[in-house]
Length: 170
Image (cartoon, rainbow, N blue to C red; front, side, top):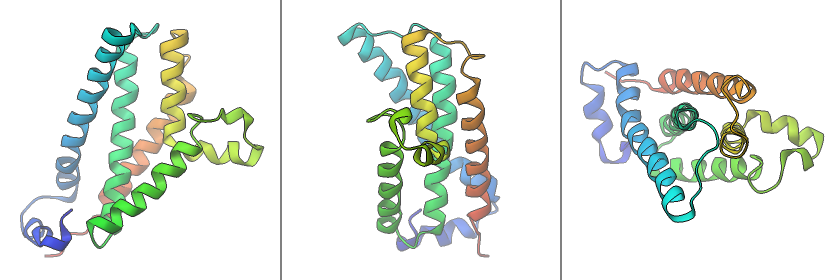
């Protein structure tokens, strides 16, 4: 949100509700994210011959929930930040922590037990596990519920927090 440029004041005087405002901020992220997922899958197939063993719709379902979750977290951080630079630095901090504790670089099972428990708070852990299981094992939605349910809960909480943290000043 361009607080430092004064556009937030213009938004504050419009008759748009907090939910409408947050959703309108997320739609470009959803659109871009889903396009990138589809394009990446197309490139993986055309260049490397890699296709998911499981259902393609599951890849999109998980990514829709994940993109909603991450964009909600980004908007929440933006709501608490004074300017774009501060929001970017805080998001960078969270991205690094999410990547290191997601199981992308090192398996979660090889982490100390307390670190394994902390990774349960990481939405990236669930999407990475789900993508591995869909691409490599062909897992079904029933088999992926241990990843899908926490990701949905995390997304719902992040979405509610994003809406609740946005304050319109009339």
